[in-house]
Length: 469
Ligand code: GLU
Image (tube, rainbow, N blue to C red; front, side, top):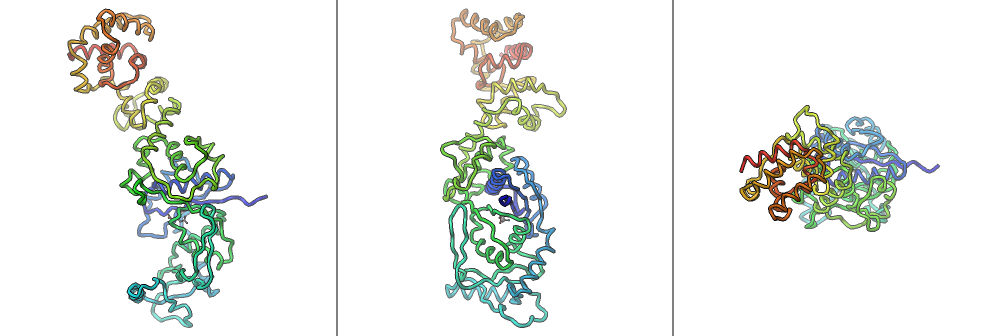
């Protein structure tokens, strides 16, 4: 049997789940699912000053919304300090790491001097071969990097990338308070959690030769690596708030569907022929690193919006009804505890889903269906609810009141008889009716609107509009 594929997403909880992090999580999740492997969630919270429980919750919330379910975890590195200590002690005992007593001030002065002379900013190895401790100083632990030769990272996306060991610093693996640092904890955890593939942003590529050396010093097999190219803004700068919202949950709030965001994220770096829209099942089936590009990707909010509109258009109205409900409650259209007939809501959504790019837009349009009364747009009211339309509106209202069979066919007949009598085109009647029924000049076809509103609401709204003239 071949080895089980195990991958992990290892965010540091120093901020919300952002677009780049979500893309990394997604590629890990897809790789695990494609290979029937395991997806582990690990919280890298060793930087106690910048990590918070709120950010941990926010990351988990974002992953839950995107439905990127982990098979194991979340594990927290702060729960695992004893494990790291065991490995640090082992490295020291074997001479593969050593205590360093240099003070921060001393190191700082050396760094400044090196900078002045244009030399590499690298620890000079003063404590590398000390034979006895310096009394009264709490040491850090440094890893003994080889100084000769090269370390080659075999990367599934970038190919082989070699680093001169000369460039690698004797990095600190434990601080003077005994707490471990990132490059050590990440290796220990990836070993301990039997990670076979490390998939992460290529901002970590420079750490990989260092981590490779630590794996080898501990006598463990190095996992496979896949470093994902960065995500940039349109101006080629690293993605930041300037380029639009970067937090995943901001997209929830703006009314994006999680699957649309997933579909957008996967295309930031991965492609499959010319196909743009994928179901999650298709993504799981097609995903591989062969189709991940080497170049950085450009974040394009317009394309994300376009995709979202596609997803809304292609979702069932029943599902959209459930997804839009929190937005309707939030904006007060639906009161807490108010019963909404979900089949009726789906019928209303049928008329709107091709014209709504986000759930927020959908919720806004649904307001005129759900609310008791409409708010008139002042300009529209002045233009269409006036003496030119009054008589037609009265005739329509009376006619609709009299119709026993309230079907679109009958309603259309009534419209036609009124416009024929007044010798006008349909728009001359439809537009005032639209303003009367929806408050504005933009809406689905007028017969669809009437169909959704039903007889009573339609007649009441016409009456109210006539009264307002
Ligand atoms: N905790 C690191 C980060 O959030 C990720 C480390 C890794 O994936 O190896 O950038």
